Image 1 (cartoon, helix red, strand yellow):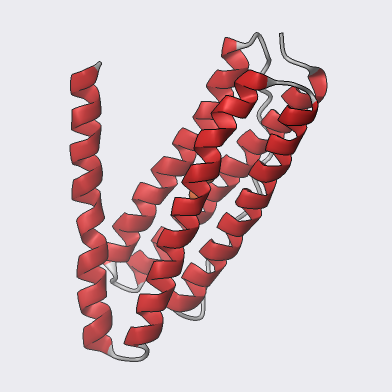
Image 2 (cartoon, protein in one colour):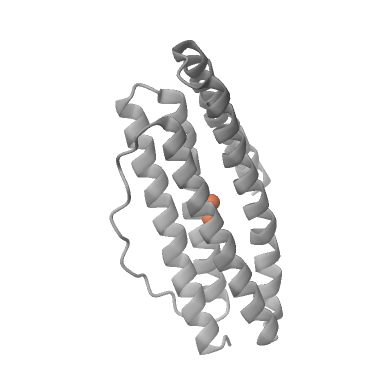
Length: 176
Ligand SMILES: [Fe+2]
Ligand SMILES: [Fe+2]
């Protein structure tokens, strides 16, 4: 059985992860409109990852006889002044999620909830990767600046992620 206050916080985290997914999808749509399909597909892959994060928490509740209660998702930001601004807002969002994960970890420790602690260790590592990845894209966008051909090349590079994800998904299916 899972403690009620922990169940509530996990439900809040499910909302946060779906909210992140929604924000990435809105960003993806903005990049589509700008004809930057590589960025758009990268962000769509990110959208899927956030849904997987939400489902990890969802499944954790189910496994422990908890009850997932889905909450409202707010309208995400859909307009950005530049690609760099869009990724800066993604970084802010990831930093916010990192803080929440750390808070949840602290609660798990205080409540001696070892299964949740174990799950959260994965998320703690994941957040380090996510922040690094988004920061890296911001750095590249800074380098490119107003240079259209640089942005074009970066868009192509970003588009390569989708292929990687598909391969990973296929490998994942083989293991089942
Ligand atoms: Fe996430
Ligand atoms: Fe994330």
